[in-house]
Length: 259
Image 1 (spheres, rainbow, N blue to C red):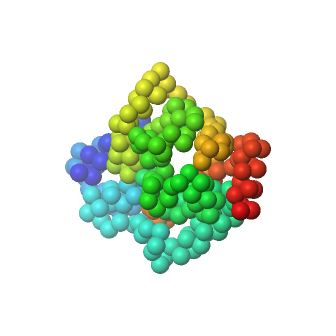
Image 2: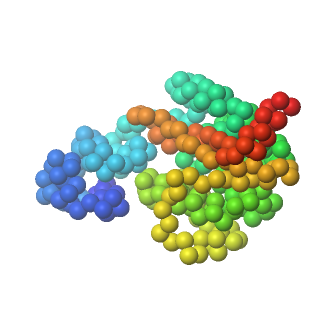
Image 3: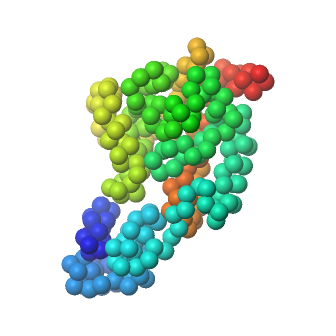
């Protein structure tokens, strides 16, 4: 099984056996033996090859287990005691971004935490992030009144699908985001919105234009991740911070913060 996984990731990354062997500083003959099961890797070899393939930490753990070894990286979840410093950092970033909205997302784009600015905007739209939208993508893709809040829906759908597909390529076919994307693509109107946009590259940014309670607002977002994580959950954790894209939105934020 470890050999099949190794070959699958090598091909997904576009490596020949020779290229991967050179990057991992092993012989191509040894790599061939590992892929066919004629040789069994040591834990160090598994980590060396997975690093050369730039595999996510969760997948490195999976490969270690497949080879008969214990996982090397944590996968604790945001409430774990050992991630107390991470929780505090997330809370600090979210709080410091208020009154502008910001959310912390896991690998499946589920909302792990949100700041007051985000909750205020949701309340303006008559939503609750813990109820109506536990996953950020549901607001955009799922058929219903929520996605009608997005005025530039077609443009947003195209760029969000591009972003999700790129993340799945990075994290592999078992990425938690893969079933989220499949569900999104199955929603009415999504495939029509994507028609003619194959091969589109990610835009530097795309304004998200929302109509919330009859008030129009335009936003751009930035992403924050944690450097050199040693925990799979932390590696996948993203903080998305939304910024006003025009003066009208800035004024709306000030009004909401003052009320």
